[in-house]
Image (cartoon, rainbow over all chains, first blue to last red; front, side, top):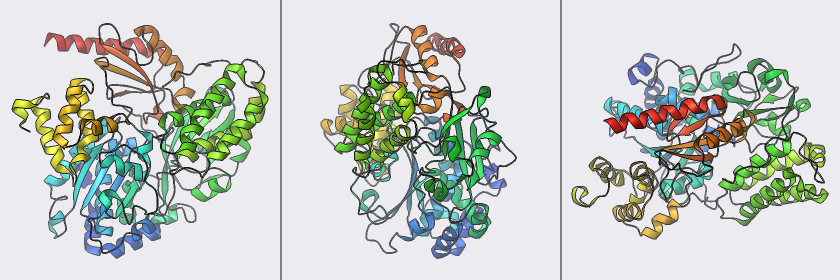
Length: 436
Length: 170
């Protein structure tokens, strides 16, 4: 069972019911559950969207798009049914926040889905979980069945004239399906290959109907925004970055775990105070701030870095999924880069060439390089390859592979050079990576 | 199809599939979960599994295979009764996942994608399983085990051996 952690600096909004038995619907109701949905039923769609806009809640999947704005793009009139789609395909290395949401607070996901449906005028919502999360899917399915039994879902939700149905869905192993259009393909029973955009999902999405797709954390945040009011939620965070975020501290910190901190929280403080510093008294070498696809940051770059979408963007990286991976000074960056690119090579769907070939070449180059068979021009070649993938793929997976690679090569060029000409890896540990 | 007479699945799973295909606006939306649930029961996607699923959804077997080969959890040959999946992605790697994977290899005497001779265990190195803050982590079938060291390996394997024995006696 995943361990829950706590720190005095936390502001528990989304995680406030964690560890309180809220997966049980009666307990959830005791804790104020479903009040937000009732409020939204009384207030109507425009009010909901205004509150969401006021909250400055931004997409927690990684792109950071303003949620209220996204919902407002869905056309009011549509010949085809509209849908809400919850993305619980959590697969970005370094990220395990949705894991805890599904485990501890499944009804918050249901509530958020209903509220999104009310806002855009959808009658059906889908909650898609990655296939590996079977025990969490079972928790979600139980919660959905309980909500139906209470009349919170169905033809007349809460005794109103409004219909809302929820369907849960299991994936079967695919990082790429976390991309919004690939997820729709998967849900339509196809290979998880992304669609060409435009049209965007808000206009043509699932089954060709207008669709709002949000990350599970975003959706689970929605009822809290409604409960406390958009403005109050916005006030917790930093400008244009409303509220809190579930930051996942992993890697070489003394106290890894998922901590809910206000947007804009200082990264250095997060590592040294919240996470208890680097384990074993070692030194910080680098940190990946938002899941494996975000470019690495050096210790000197995090001194005054507030963790919100804009500040991390300015620092040359991304807030991404909020998965903070901490790397100590005994780690070989070339090996870390190789493990990162191996993942993207494995997960590339193979549809567009820069990603399919680029990830493969990068993996081959880095494997050879780390094994001590690199030559000087490899370093430039790795950089050249990654630069030529950027912006040249249909979906962000190509960028997700190229961006961190560029970061490693540019910021740790010296360490790459130290591997040259048959020298063994200065950290010599695991040279061979199994071929997945 | 009438599940009692024709299905290769248990009556319970066949009934579940009957309901599943009706659940969505489009029948084939049931395809991906059906493949996984079928694999859970039969052990892998055999030709017979693919044929029946194609039939239930109303698409060709080729179409089913085309989709099935995309998803990394789906397999076309049997795995062990207990499939040990060791995550070695970055967060787990930083906390010793390769030592853990090595220990599993040594104890089981098999490598990546190997199956033990008795068919009890198979081993896989897998990508991120979403347990990064409790790393290193593994899954045995769908069970998570986290915060592991190589010292845990023997105990974990014993637990599942015991479980298999208990099932055998029942």
